[in-house]
Length: 401
Ligand SMILES: *Cc1c(COP(=O)(O)O)cnc(C)c1O
Image (cartoon, rainbow, N blue to C red; front, side, top):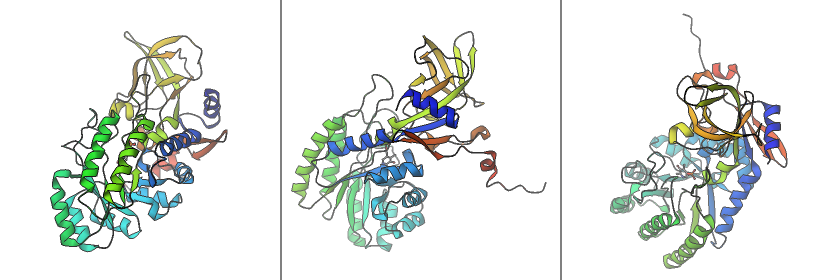
């Protein structure tokens, strides 16, 4: 889609506004499946937490994908979007036994990441197949918030605890049908991914009844010029070869599964905000927009650098700006960023706003959550209305005081 389409949508639906390009999501999905075309049984489980709007889930369902969920509410959204229970995997961390039990009862594949629940579940439901999430202890990049496979991580069962896992299986006679790892969203190069994959293969050899190996995600997409991007085609060639070889050794048909979130939806997203004020100070020029970390928290939470374009003035002279939000707290989107000259009223577009943007939005400062539009077949479809004051009050109970 073009910047002029985005300008048009901002005029029709107002700002702030999330816009997702359905073609881009489909393109990424096709890229991923093409890279692994030589794997006989491939399963893509879209990580719902990246962007969980129901129409986006329906779009992804239409490609034939499956989903990865981390809460029972995501499971329910998935069912609502048309996914069958057998198309859903539940990979929670730190949730209650009752929640896992309830999801398993729906017929959803569960993935357990600690020994305590594994033993409890195996004792109660020896016949329900379970996947186990291991921690391969591979450090994926330097960002602790998004690297989840390192030694101090709360995720997964340590590979050093496999003897205990085997004892639980022996004692309970439970059935393990899959092994999973997810090392986080910051895998820097393919060699690290392949190294972690070897650990998964080694672990898999301890289990004789597996149907699938789930390699999680961690694919990087570029946020700014010069960023590292996972070369999915190269990973596809290398991992396919190794997987097919392992499958032969293993002697049972195996499915190769992935759970991409960011890879599928990040680049499809554009977040449009209007400039409320241009403020010259002694040290910089601030561009203050009609949004803040209540709608887009990644720059503040992860130091993410979303590219920002002034789509009202694409041909203007470039100047340096610090782009900030309207929240009464520091909420800097970008510091000293070169952007085409900004006037009050201009519309700025934040790129890569598909993954972990709307899904992390809040009502802080009693602001309303933005509307969302899905751009499909050359047309913008409103998929979520902008909130109103009624939404803010919806669950509140005013007592007599
Ligand atoms: C968040 C998450 C993903 C998706 O990670 P991306 O970096 O968005 O691809 C996959 N698997 C699990 C278990 C997750 O928690």
